[in-house]
Structures are given as C-alpha cells and as structure tokens.
Image 1 (cartoon, helix red, strand yellow):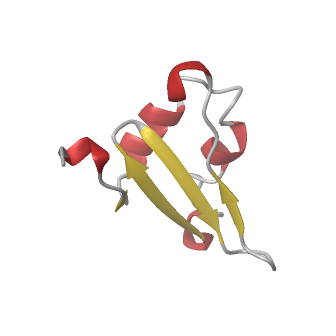
Image 2 (image 1 turned 90 degrees about the vertical axis):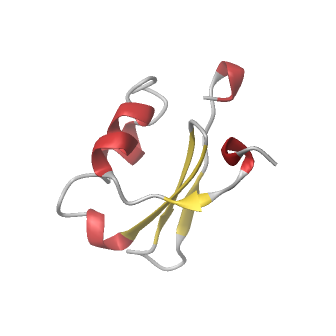
Image 3 (image 1 turned 135 degrees about the vertical axis):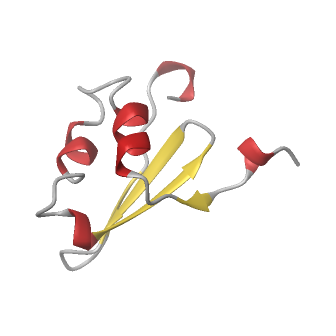
Length: 72
C-alpha cells in the first residue's frame, strides 16, 4: 500500500494550514481550530492531502472530514 493510502496522526500546524488553505471556505472551521486557543482540544489525521479533525473540546466530540471536488 502506498504511503498516501495510510491514515496517520498529523501534528504539523504549518502543513495542516497549507492543506486546508487550498479551500479556505470549505475548511473555515478547521483553519480556525489551528489557533493556539483551540489547538489543545484537537486531534488531526491525514491521508495524503486529505485532513480530518477530531475536536474534543465539547461533548460529544466532533469529527470534521470534509472534501470538495476531487476529494480535497
């Protein structure tokens, strides 16, 4: 299986910002959660250029896994 097919935890805010910034309207919530205030309440996952966010600062936790045309 190619590396891009694996889901892995991601901790690099700069990389996440670049990936999410390709479609800032779609990923507005995720981009906001990169802020220092929200960061401790987030867990990020990535498969290639696709990003998922688990926000655990509320009950129940919220999973955001949005994709635009072409899966990004």
